[in-house]
Image (cartoon, rainbow, N blue to C red; front, top):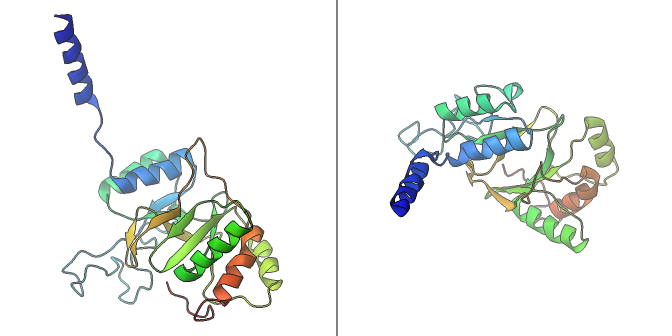
Amino acid sequence: MREILGRRRRLRFRRKRRPAQPAQLEAALICAAEWHWPVLPGAGLRAAGGRSDRGRDCACPDPECVVPGAHPFDPGVLAASTDERMVRWWWANRPTAPVILATGGSAPCAVSLPAMAGARALVALDRLELRLGPVVATPTRWSLLVAPYSLEQLGELLFAQDCVPSSLRFHGEGGYLALPPSETGSGQIRWERAPLPGAGAPWLPRVEAVVEALVEASVNAPDGGSRLAY
């Protein structure tokens, strides 16, 4: 009889377990509730059968959107939140929406560059034995998350460089970045360097520690770093 009761207790426990959350919601909750990074849902992609029947068009009204799906639309970036209830409500209504990080302030900033240049930059930084934080990758661009920086600080760093390729993008105060496991018009977003497990938000390097290697890798890219390559 004890064995039967024990088995029943285990079955009742299994029935009470909450179902697995959608991947985007889980990622958004980790960012907002555990790491205190403000997030909001991205525009996402138009379903197949939309304007061009390709299923890769942005769901926003702009037919020429250069970052389809990978930007805020409604709400705007200023609505980004760390409130768990707000995050759950957003993704309950749009469970497949991309996870958009509002960069700057107390949140991470980022520097992004074309994927080929990004791979070269990581090799160079590893040779220097420089500790890196998370690295976000799409089929076309890689983004290194860095500690928050100001426009003044960034301006001084770039002024010291002989050449700053136009293919580099800087995601600071008022900016945004799509995070894994989002899917956008450029393809699936993934972690090239995933956040290390542990309590608290991931460690981030300072921008001055990485910017020179990123500039050099972009300049030495096949196109000379002149192609933005969203």
